[in-house]
Image (cartoon, rainbow, N blue to C red; front, side, top):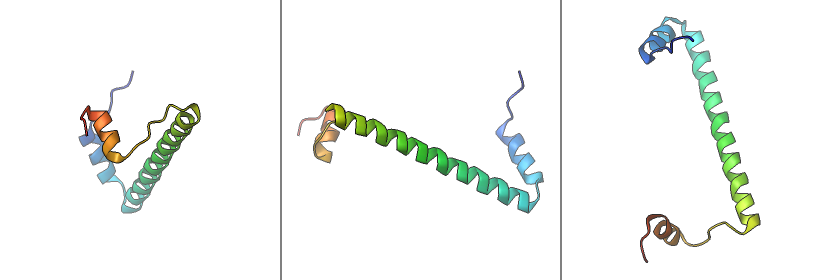
Amino acid sequence: MSQPFTLQAIIEFVEALTEDEQDLLFDLIHKRRVAKRRQEIAENAEATRRAVSNGTAQRGTAAELMADIFGNEE
């Protein structure tokens, strides 16, 4: 099994890249993070759609939902 890289080692590796390579890496990481977040949002939307279809979705005002989450009475 290979040893994981330390954050410091990764930083040093990135600093050794050319500016163009660093820009390309930054853009690639940014695009992958955006794509991952979009996937998470899509999964949450699908779970919400299923909950609404099944009748298990909670409904109410933000204050009511917060009270339900934290156990406070309004």
